[in-house]
Image (cartoon, rainbow, N blue to C red; front, side):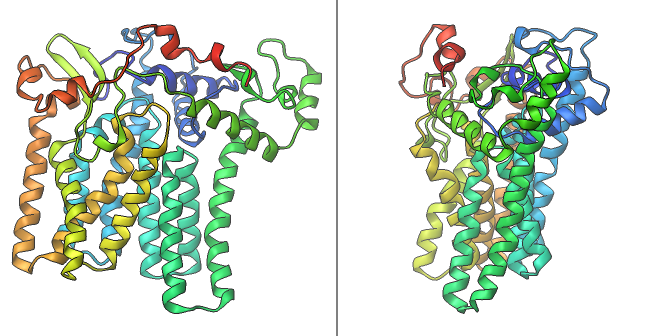
Amino acid sequence: MIAEPSKVIFDEVHFGNFSAWYIQNRFHFDIHPPLGKMLMGFIAGATQYKGDIDFANKFGEDYHVNELFFVSQRITPAVFSAMTSPLLFCAMRCLSVPSFFAASAGLILTTDMSLIVEGKFILSDGMLHFFTCLHIFAFCLFMNKATPWRTIFAGVTMGAAMACKYTALGLIAVDGMSQLVWIIMHFPPIIDIIERGTLMLVPAFFTFISAWILHFVITPYTGYNSEYINVNHASTLIPWGKENVTYWGNRLIGSGFIERIIDWNIVMNRINMRSDIPHPYESYPKYWPLLMDKYVGFYHAPNRNIHCLGSPATYWLSSVAIGLTFVAALFRKIDWRNVLLTWAWAVSYFPFVLVPRTMFMYHYLVPLMFAIMNMCCLIHCALPEGISDSVMMLVLVVSIACYIYFRPWIYGLECPSCPTTHMWSHHWHKGYDKPIYTDILKMYNTTERYATI
């Protein structure tokens, strides 16, 4: 079903072009770091795709019979996304959570609607979620036994997650707070603190910077919105279609990589934070945990829809578990694992409340992973052994039932009654009152507004 629907869906109009531009070695602008997009571009190129699908002019249109490479491009994020649940299971086992509860955490994540929908189209979120879960596993492995190689592994995976999207920045606070607690509780020698910090932070920085350096190296030609680049660095780009031997010398004597990376991230952040024009599918962070705001409409056809909406059972139960964690703490029914996972959820979620730009429901997926882990861990820790197994089984069954019930919205199956029977809250469809601009150029065209940056 990865080829269905055979239309350009939602942000495929952007990320499909990114893959093509990497194949064509053309520099381009985006508000996200490059690793996830580069992986899609490299794998698409390995399948002999020539970058000849013009996604920008095909939004909502059918792929032609000679444009079947969109299938291989969709497979890439789907494969990465499929590995998130096994990694979450491994992470829970490293935290000494029993196999049944660890497997339940992985299965609950597997059945979440928003994770499935985000992972089956040409979007970089599949890579973000993979590297986030890989870091969660690496970090839990490190917490289990802090060997040098495990510390380096945790650092590399943290850098890779941040090199996909900056929504993974909360991982720094998770790792940092755990090490601060380690210092306070154990008073280790200063050399041990420096060694551990170096072994984690240096690989993270190196991985993050390496992704950016590779981005600049493999995109020497001017492309989409390359005019955003600082005038001091513009000489490092070769005009598309006007190649001359002297241009390559400009790339060698131009500004350094680090300077370009810093300047380009400043431009990205400025434009990203100004992306506050209301969108038809935007939602507010304060409504995400209880699923009280609008879904993201990916595909619409007669009696068929694909909505990026979280599974009610997963969102509601995991959010209730966050609240119950504080109640259980009063009765000393939790342990350090609940504290760690609740902290991880908080530092991944609450920064969104302060972000001024337009946001969407799928931005909650990283905090959701920690909320699911905390829920399964809480059931194990706070309840007696026999009762905890039964409660965990009930939660698992409800999550699977929710997945089966909402399958038409995940895969675009024919369901004439879904708009009435599946729309449990009118906020899912209408959201909360917010102004919507009908001027399409204002909504999507940032070139004119930010060309001077």
